Amino acid sequence: MTEYELHELQMLRWGQISTQYDLVLTLITIYLTMIFAFLAAAHFTGRDMSRFQAGILSSVFTIAALFTMYQLIGLFVGMSFWGEQLAQGYFFMAESLNKPELSELGQKVQEDSTIGWEEVFIAIIGLLGILVSLLFMWSVRHPKTK
Image 1 (cartoon, rainbow, N blue to C red):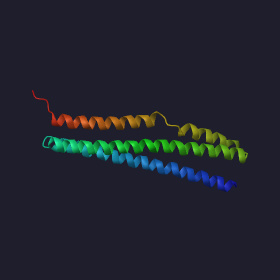
Image 2 (image 1 turned 30 degrees about the vertical axis):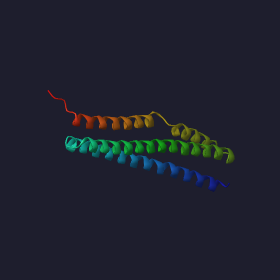
Image 3 (image 1 turned 90 degrees about the horizontal axis):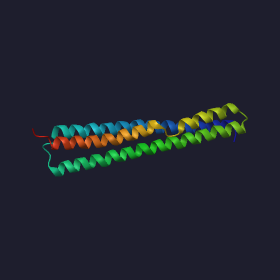
Image 4 (image 1 turned 180 degrees about the vertical axis):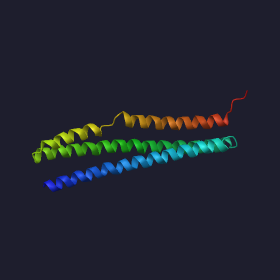
């Protein structure tokens, strides 16, 4: 492979990571939209729904939100994979082109591409958001009497 082809391959890998990052932001937006729509429906119509309607709404919400979280976690794993591919590409380029500074860049990319506390935190907050939303629906449908 020529030096130009190696650089072009690295740019394609950077493009994959960038695309997946954009998809993460899109999925977070979709997730937040679902949460707020469910909370609005629970607040404004929760008491007036039949048990069947509330069950259907809660079930559809739960399935859609969990599927969105599943996709989000998959994107985190994909970004980690492409980051590792990018790092390996820099290691290969450093060796084949005799440019040790690319090895340092590969090391930095490799460190940054591992799944860290940020991704775990986002996943936990997302799952808690689903649970809290369902609890909100339950509290609207079962108000405390004094």
